[in-house]
Image 1 (cartoon, protein in one colour):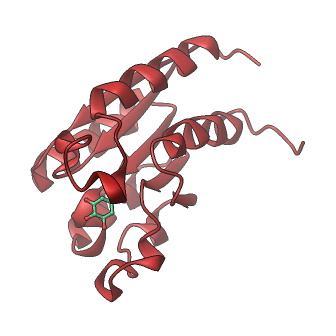
Image 2 (cartoon, protein in one colour):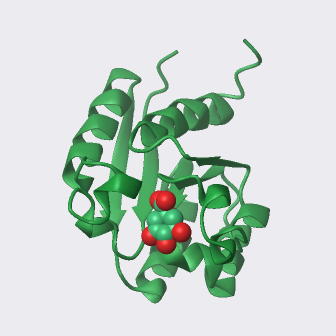
Length: 153
Ligand code: DQA
């Protein structure tokens, strides 16, 4: 189904600007720009538009989450390492009453113990991890279904 005027925020946290060269054995070969165009194309095909951003700064990410409250139909966030540290990002997400998905390229539960705890998960509707760049497309599809309140199947 095509939903008019649907803007989806895709927010990426620290070090994700280095995708493609950063530990490719963990995060894959796709750059953030590759992901940006794949997600934007997929969204366009669904009648949605994507506001795709990356910052290495916690406060900037929080500003964008707050901004999404007034402008976005839904939000996908890969908070990078702030996943495991940021109560402030958790608090910001709690204030935003739109469908929200936490996303990680890697399977954070199969890695170091410090990555197994997320401050973000309790503040979002769903979590997707371990699918690599493909996860962004999976998240987009799932988010549109959440926004659209599309019943299974
Ligand atoms: C990550 C997982 C985090 O633990 C890590 O700090 C990242 C990337 C992921 O996408 O797999 O920067 O969010």
